[in-house]
Image (cartoon, rainbow, N blue to C red; front, side, top):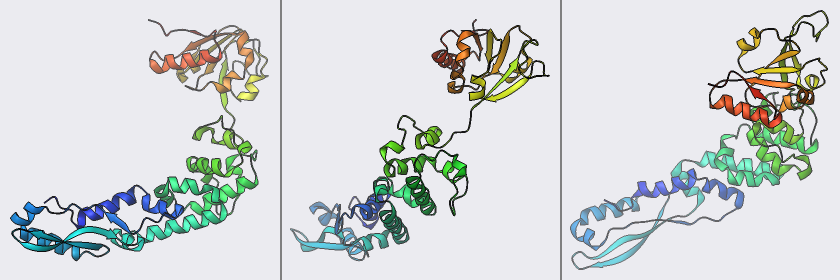
Length: 327
């Protein structure tokens, strides 16, 4: 049977819910109801050949709660005048929620919209676009609004994320919700409080004016005559990128290797250091302009990633030579 029964009618409502359409109406105040559902009815041949099934179909629709059935009289050459469903309506949102069993979720989302409208109406487009995600975040939403409120009052705060001290907001909360907060802050903050050149979760701090944890560079001195640290010969040193950029070492050659054992076992070399690479991402090393005066040798894996990393490094230091990476 291809006629539309209660199961198929409910499925139409389910699709509206799963696309977020019914929840979106809370934000937009869209008057969707009464809502006419798509109804495929029996044809004249069905009435002739399957009359009892047609009667059962009509009776099932008539007995279905939460919908209103409009009827029409059909004159049939065999069965005479029959009264059959012509259209089906869901009269109110209340009827739809009762049928779907989603009343609690709808009330929860309505409360989130109300709280947001009162505190930060600029965020409503985010809720309109992502109603189901908002519902999933219902327990976290008050804390998200608290963070937004604080940042609106303290744009580009110049502190670390975990330094933010707010009642009920634990120290890792902002880090854990950077993706959601980015969408909210872009709407709530003035344009000059957002660095739009910084994108993605990894650049959240820079985008909104938080301090970033310093990148570190690890290196070994390969020449015993170079005294990088008084009283230490050929030390294994880790420095923040800013301190590394200000080094004044009598170095002519710099080796970079991705393998830690290669780094640790690298033999002594005059006037040289070896740097332990960190895969993709040479921004920290690029601050060290003194490297432009050194010959740089890169030793990476002989695969697509290794050559990709080499290519990226050459984007900062065009004179880099590879070694042990040819045939």
